[in-house]
Length: 347
Image 1 (cartoon, rainbow, N blue to C red):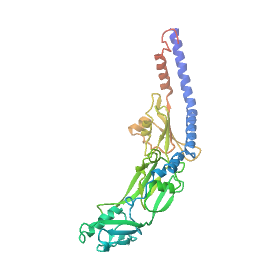
Image 2 (cartoon, rainbow, N blue to C red; image 1 turned 180 degrees about the vertical axis):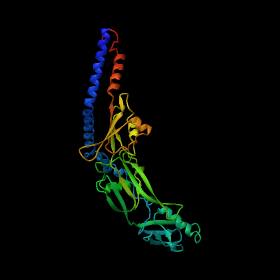
Image 3 (cartoon, helix red, strand yellow; image 1 turned 45 degrees about the vertical axis):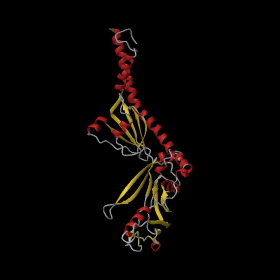
Image 4 (cartoon, one colour; image 1 turned 90 degrees about the horizontal axis):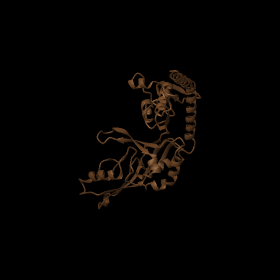
């Protein structure tokens, strides 16, 4: 009986010590985790993170670059075109595309050439000539390329509008912009305005996402896409967030798209058995020495009582652990390993 009372008293003391240690050390533990990830972010932002991609851009870039191709080129205002109709020498001519994008040829009305590839313009001219020439075969050659504006923005060393002649490709533009800056992410977005094939004068914006790791590190030349006048090449900055504490997969995660708090916890493989669901904090960078602290209750977020907060770049999510859950977890483990002998001879 005395032995049982003694063991109960020892368990009670251990429980109190764990509880006090948890309460006293929680703030210190949070500070240590935040300091660790702050130091990691400084290393991430330091010069060198994007240097490997820049090295590949300089070395592999020549192998991945494509020769200028008229098949990829989109005709634009002020281009000078040489047009030839097979076995009809009198129709051979040169025509400069007007500022509005049109050309005028013998036997045809004005033709809108701007935005068309060479092959598309050849087909269009041949169709217009069918009433005058039997099965016309048309050849178009870009004799003088206009100066076209292509913007390269975001995490590059020299972001601005560039003036290029001839057909250019993604790697050409990244090289012209001096390569990637240290805070560059691993994707590139090419935005371009496209015309509707069904509704006249209707346009839409197309976004093409290119994985720079696959392009430069894996050498996938197909991703070195052609770019055209008016395109905007955007290299977003890298985004990261961290999850630590009572989760099954603590660590750093990429913030590529919109990610919410619950999605971030799922990416960290969920809460572990000692997690305190009512004491989860997001430490958010404010640009100042003090971080903004957002406290969340996991169950309340899941039930919709609290907002599922969107995660921002450099957020640090710390899931606190419950002293009571830790105690009983260790107690159960201890009993399972034979460390305790309840009602027996002691420990």
